Image (tube, rainbow, N blue to C red; front, side, top):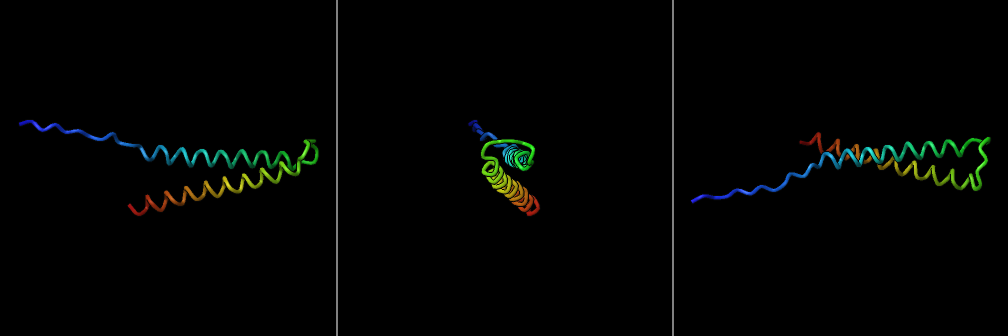
Length: 80
């Protein structure tokens, strides 16, 4: 009697972890760039103050998301 063995495909969790960290870091950097550009007095953009506030809030959220994912995965990896 021959028993067939089936295996489940292995899901690469580390790839999704690094993508999440990468995207949140690039998002925070993009937010910093937009926030810095809208903060200069020489640049004339309509509704500059509103754009500056929105980009600052987006940058704060992206930075906290980035820090949270790094700390979360560091905690998981150090417990193994």
